[in-house]
Image 1 (tube, one colour):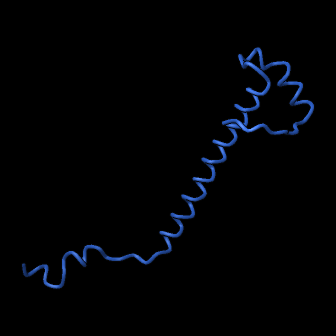
Image 2: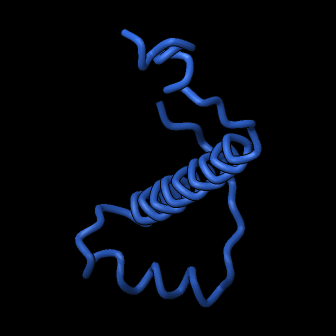
Image 3: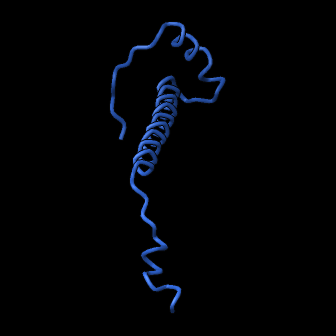
Length: 80
């Protein structure tokens, strides 16, 4: 569902869009702007995921390491 909104853009950007949207095979100015917003939002979502991933990796890196093999082997592993 599309939500109507008012945006403000620089005049030189508006003039550029107005001149080239047909050459770039967009149906209207608004379609061009929607596509630009969509692209920017996807890029920002990817960047946010990357920041969250880095924060999670740092948090994991600060956690104490458990010796998993020691718990599997037990005390008398060599006597089995």
